[in-house]
Length: 201
Image (cartoon, rainbow, N blue to C red; front, side):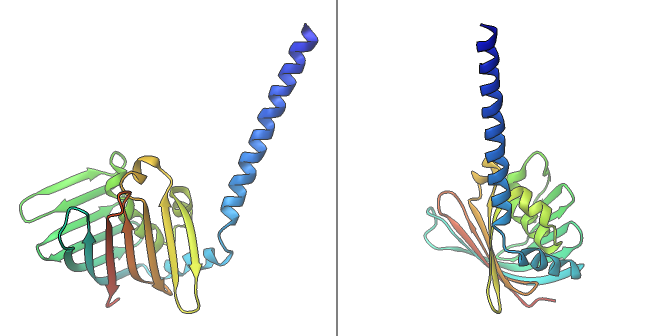
């Protein structure tokens, strides 16, 4: 009886070790799936501490007869400040500073603790991490597909958090060098927001 119990324990321990081995092997393979030049690519963004860009945005949704169009500017200040100012069709601002998100319209102001409501910040935080060259944040919070081309690049980010993924299915960012050119946000219901960026300064 004692021998039998010991054998069962040995088998359980062996299976546990085997599962851990496969887990870490698969984790290592997932991390290694990024090309070596991805780190160099992310480091490019650390060279700029501040940047401003104009944008035009179109929101496509099943409940809309035609896309919602807006325009304005975005401003980044290292290490963790990003503001999106919608100037047309009416003023709205979204500002992230650390863990705080402020949303301001002509009639009201909302302050949101991002630790409690990550779905409000996933897009802006992804941009902050990229613009700040924070590779650790990107890899901890997203599955990453990096596609380097001759004169441009694209980055597909899929949220790891299942709760956040209920709001944002993927974030596709494309650009040239350390300049962002386009952002495509896809929601789980296939609604999309396409943002074109230009006039970098």
